[in-house]
Figure (cartoon, rainbow, N blue to C red):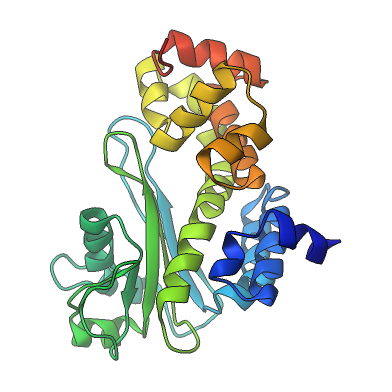
Length: 272
């Protein structure tokens, strides 16, 4: 059943993924919908996710609401990377993760860092200049990182995978583009206080949480389009649309699509 489904919805993905990677991606996406707690998040990262991105460390963080800071949380399966190493990697100017965040914000592309990679822009990804001493001191070895921006261009979320097995390349960058929207959705779901964002923030702040892609989806929901129709129009998978819709419902603190469209209209998120 999985193999048959991958031939249909996964046609676009199969251009850049092997059949095994495409199947693993579907497993990862399906499992992401059932994650409610941080312990489940870590288990998810150790399952089929490891087949796609075999890593030992994930540094990730959210920035939501007005004047809310951005900080990284560490999920590690190795004893070699402690908080002190993360602090080293986040040092201004020389910190490898600090530079990865800066490079992503400037380019909007996935960022790869490895001692053997030449710095520069390579179409689908960016390799920033790196302080090799900081990389070594941080014990991270290498980095594959990507994030999502808010409507105003500020950080919404950022994900930095490290100590990845094998050589980094374009396939890792493509996988990040596929996986990060689901990582973002799951992290929003399990992060403390996010489920109550509607109670803590005013309407203008809530509107600021809605990303450009989510506004596009809301626009089509307002016209009565189904997830499948929206996926076709936007050239993304129905699962991605479904994930965005779950995010939208949670951010707007509504129960269904019609309520989401009505509230989005009131907040000025929909063009008439």
